[in-house]
Length: 351
Image (tube, rainbow, N blue to C red; front, side, top):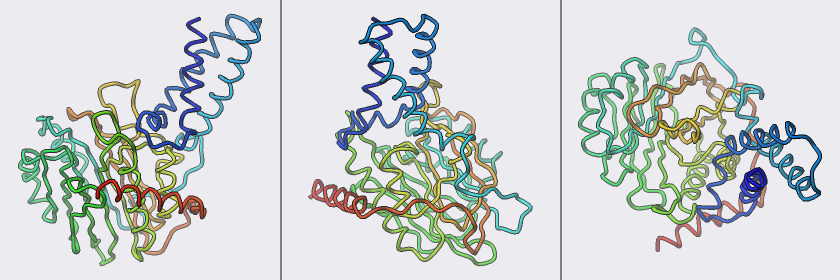
């Protein structure tokens, strides 16, 4: 009975994301694909251990479990080292300009800033995006000002404050409110050594959930609006931040198709950044996407800083001409219609 109940949970949890509802509790099942795969494999192993003599009903459930295991493996396979990479690898001693970036959701009420500052000192990033920053966190980050003279600070007490700090000069930086009035994003040009400029976008959309937005419309719309901006940009682009969505979700995939940006995670690993305290419910929520002008030197999850997120480090090599990295699949007309409809509904909800 327990086996059947657990198998049914795996099957139902696999099927629910096929429903194109934006209700938070349905879209949540986009997240635990690795966990569902692991549970399914354990259940399959138990059934093989017990033997294959079973009732027709149990055989039907086993067949559905096998299909669920196969589908979950198919969805997460690109984010394992077994898959081919979407972005070429580069070395620090190559001919590109090296850019080191760190994004970290510090958890607004976390007061262990010394851990975060020490990790930044060790990682030596060129660009830092700190999310969930209130005024207290902004004050702590001021200690980095001598090393990071270019900055945009927008602290808030609602868990959506954001700080951008850079060793490279910022060009026309601005704080944008793409969908929701108190959920900022940071847009800026960044000038690299040698004079080349790229667009930087820092994001932290509000997540869906029982205590947040009741559906994913606003989060999805913010990603789509960003994707539309990137598609029109004539400059190289880097998008960084806590997207409150997993790499393999329908919306994140749609964002990639619209924007044309690449995901350096593909073929390298999941780099699960949340939840830092519970290894069995970790998901890749903190992201970097970039145009084909960049190649990857290194990606790694940094140490625990007292937050529910791990900081996420990426070193890129900038190539003025687009490299030979794989191009993402372009959005189909139906997908663009879906994207436009999501944005329209998000704005209607805010009127």
